[in-house]
Amino acid sequence: MEEDETKNKLEKIFAQYKGERSELIPILQDTQRYIGYLPDDAMQAIADFLTMPESQVYGVATFYKQFHFTRRGKNKIAVCYGTACHVKGATRLIESFERQLGIACGSTTEDYEYSLERVACVGCCCLAPVVVFNEEIYAHFTPDKVAVILEETRTRTCTHKADKRGGKQQ
Ligand code: FES
Image 1 (cartoon, protein in one colour):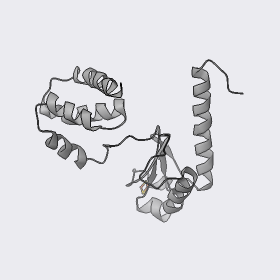
Image 2: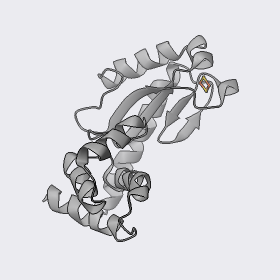
Image 3: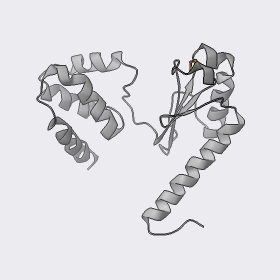
């Protein structure tokens, strides 16, 4: 079932390309966007589509930090660990997220709701310390905002689920 879903998504992605090796990176990016990460069967399918060895596809993909090879959480939390953010308390932010999520930095919660990672400078040092939450920048972040931001996401998720079922959140 899951395999068929991956296959369908890949067919839609491949339909937009000619099958040339120069298209590898955009195909990897599209695959990650639609599937959430780059599973083994997708890597094999990409290699077949571009008629290149799978090892070469992995070679390119592993070179870039933007690609992930294991399933990640629906909510992606990236704590900037560049110099400015480190000096301004990024370590405390990471510890706070780790404590509240019950996971180590670099991993994903069991329910696949959250992934936590630390990243290199995201380019807005004057806003340090910075947290990127689902691609949105949060400036001058403090440990006490961790619980707030997680609670907001949980509420949003519950509301969304209730709406989907046709119910209303009270
Ligand atoms: S060090 Fe964090 S934004 Fe530059």
